[in-house]
Length: 309
Image (cartoon, rainbow, N blue to C red; front, top):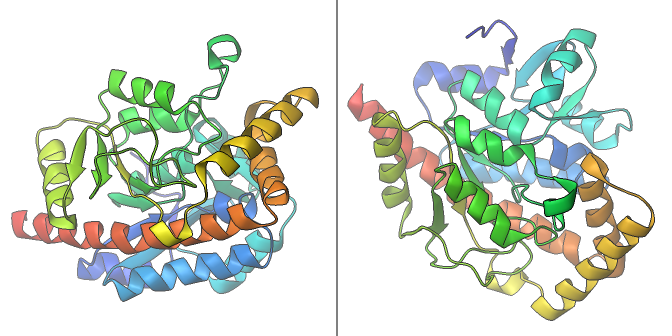
C-alpha cells in the first residue's frame, strides 16, 4: 500500500500524531451535491460539528496529483464554486491523480482514501445503491462494492430514496455488509425517517456500534458497514410528497436520456426545484445530524483502538 500520494492538513496531521479520533468527509457533496453558497456553509458547519463532538474532521479531495486528507478554507471554497471539478469514483482515481486534475471524491473514493489514511469512520448524506430499473440497465453504484471490500464505516441517512432501496439492501446482504440502524429498527429513506425495510441490527448507542465495528475488524471480516441514521423528525419530508416528486423527476430524466453518473446530480437538482428548496433544507439537516452521531461513534471506536494498543 503506497501512501506517498497522501497529504495531510496540519489539523489532521496533528490529530494522527496525538491519536485523536478522525472522521472522513467527502467532497462531492460540496462540488456536485449542493448549490453555492449552501455547499460551502454546510461543509464548514459539518466540520465544526465534528470538532464539537471531540473528533477531527478530514474532508477529502484530489488536488494537484495528491490525495488531500483535510482541506483548507480556500480549497473548500474553490470546490464549492468550481465548475470543472471531476466527480471521482474508484475507477477514476488513477487518471485524476495522474493528470493532476481537481477531483471531488464520491462515497466509494472517499472510503478508499480514508482507508489509506487509517480513518475508520466516514460521514456522508446518503449512500448510492441499486437504481430503479437496474435489472435492465445494470446501474448499480460503486459505493456498494466498496462497502463490501473496504474497512470503513459509513454513517448516512440511509440510501437516497431515488433508488431501489429493497434491491440495495439485498445487494449489501449478499456481500456481507452489516446494516446497523442508529437507534432504529427501520432503514431510513434519506428524506424520511422510515422505509418499508428493516436493518440488520439496532445500534442502541455509539458505544454499542463502536464495539460491533471493533469486533468485526478484529476478526478480519473485511469490508465496511452502513450506519443508517434517520433524519431528525422535525426535518423530514412527507413521504407522499417526496415519492410523487421522485417519480416525476425519474420520468423526466428518462425522457431526456440522462443516465449513469449524471443521473443522481440531475435528480437531486430537479427535486430541489420541484420542492421549492425543501429537499436541500432536509439534506443539510440530515448531513449535520450524521456528523453529530458519526463523530460520537468515531470517538468511541478510537477509545477501543487506543486501549487495545
